[in-house]
Structures are given as C-alpha cells and as structure tokens.
Image (cartoon, rainbow, N blue to C red; front, side):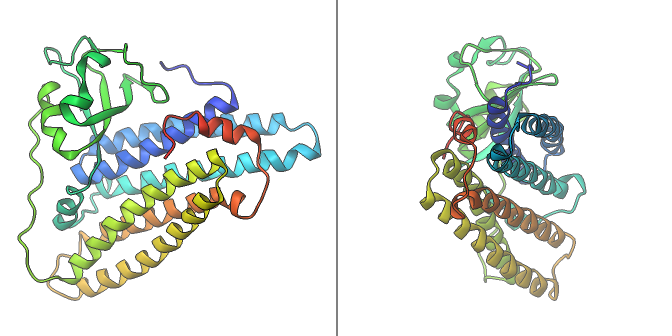
Length: 319
C-alpha cells in the first residue's frame, strides 16, 4: 500500500491522481473549515515533492541522445505543472491554516454543489470497521465514492481494491453528493455533521456578487485541471482549446471578483473574511494557468513523449 512506484509511467499516473485529490480536499477543507483536511493536503504535498524529485531524476537519466531531449522536456513541463497544481491546493488550505476566514455566504453557496469531497475516520465498533469496501456499498448508502485511503502514513490512491478491509484508524477520502455526508458519519460512528444553513434571501450585495464569482471560479478551476489531463491522455485539440478558454475565463473572473471585494470593503462589512476570498481567487486562477501550461504542448503542436499518454490514460480518473 505504501510502496512508491518506480517507473516514470507509474509515478506520473500517481502524481496526476494525487494532485486532483489535493485540489478536492483543499476546497473541502475550506467548506468544512477543517484544519485536519488541510493537514492531509500538506501530507500529500510531501508525498508529491518526493514524486516530483524522483520523476525529474528519471527524466534526466533517461535522455541518451539530443533527439530525445524534446520529448523528455515535455514530460518535465507536465511534471512542473502538476507540482504547481499541488502548490495551489496548499494555497487554498491557507485560508484555514492561517485563519484568513471566508464569508458565511460562500459556505452556503458551496453546499449547493453537486459533489463535494469529504474524509471520515473509521472508529472501532462502527458499521464500517473490519469489513471489505465492497460490502459497505458506500455508493448506494451515501451516494459517495472512495477516492483514496490513508492508513497511518501509507496511502492508497491509484487503485482502490474492493477487497480492501477497512480497520479502525483508517481514513477514507470520498467524493459525492453533500446529502450523503450525514449518513456517512452514521456508518463510521463519526460525530454528527450539520449542513450549513442558507442565508435568508435579500437584496443582492457586492459581497454576494463576489461570492457568486468565486463559486464559479472554484468549479471552473476544477474543470480546467480535469480537462487538461484528459486532453493530454487523448491528445485532443478540442479539449485543449477548451482548457485555454477556461483559463482565460478564470483570469476575467478574478478581475471581477477583486472589484466586487473592494466595493464590499467600502461598506459595513467585516474586512477580515475578504482576505480569504482574495486568497481563494488567486489559487483558482493559478490552477487554471497550470492547466493551460499542460495543454500548451497540444495547442502549440509540440511533440511529447508517448509515456504521457500511457501514464495519464491509466490514471484513476479521466474526465
């Protein structure tokens, strides 16, 4: 479960999956205001740093002739973009770890998302303890799917085996409908979770506009990253063009958000949570920029090493 893959193909596939989980958990840490989730992202960053270092070393050692340099340079560019995506995820968690705060309106809006990420710690005596994953039927029970498992400091990310027996102390990372979180906590004997209450409807304020833009930025940045990986795996010009469009859209939305935040700050609004909005906007824009950097290899008609398609095609999820 904790053996680090040694081939470049396997490491690249794991890095892709790890970066996406980091982004999901980072946004979830903000939604749940959960320092523990932020700590999980930081631990995954350490794992990612090791992967990046190992991948770069393999790339350098693999080049034997000048003709091979361009193809391997493309791999190095993708590795750098994946590393930056992971760093942007850590930037998102600083809203929690640095207690920047965000407006309550944002939490309410995020609760309307079709899917959220969540984690749950398995306790002794719970319905989940000492049972294989396939018998838990989490997808049916909760409308959520397991995307990663941590046991102590060991991670299972790329392949989630249905025969894997869950034991007390394991931490499951899931993604799915927010409506399933209450049931998930019941099955894991976890503390009761109460969903955030929506604020009463009223006149649209500058802060409301900023929050609406930021929710769209969050969704757009996640889509850009997923589409970028798919574009590389499929070598699809149409998907690559869409990623570039989403990155440009994120730049525009950040400009609009900064304007609404500055206008809101002039009024009777607590300025402290506004820092979190700006931090989240910068991180979302960076995610889009790095997604665009990856597909530049396609839009600029640059050749890239065949291992990219092989590795990203076999990764856990292709959008």
